[in-house]
Length: 178
Image (cartoon, rainbow, N blue to C red; front, side, top):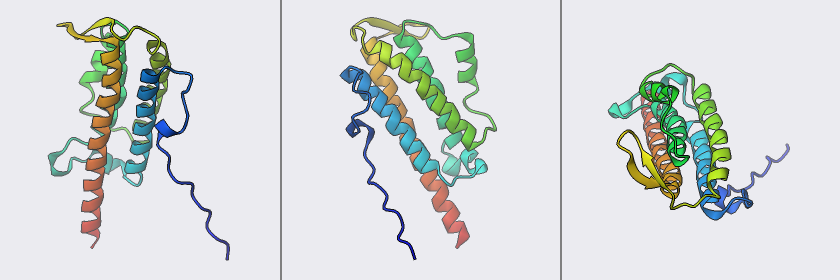
């Protein structure tokens, strides 16, 4: 009988020494995206595609949050870059509430979004964070730094909601199995 392999303990992204070439604020945003992907992968593991679209206790679905995380990251970075949203981004925003994608497709959308975001964050991380930026049609005031930090905290907020919803789904499944 062979012994099971020993799994290395989990180390959070900010302690891995990654993205060392990126200035601290940008590095923190990249680490937040890395942590988000780690958590999304971990907590959605084992969900069926149907469960991904379920709304237990009338909570927004995991699918909604995954779409929103991917697409809002793109939108917030557009504002950080001094751009307004494109027709494509506005169309994607309106479609966040519905869809039939598989969990794998939704996670892939998040991965692609975060990969694209990483390139953009690396560029923005060298900018003057106090540079003013406007958000939306009303041009609500923020800055490059404010938008970068919001990418991280907004993403983490929705990851927390995915974790909670996934836990509710799994608890309901376990209770139904008894």
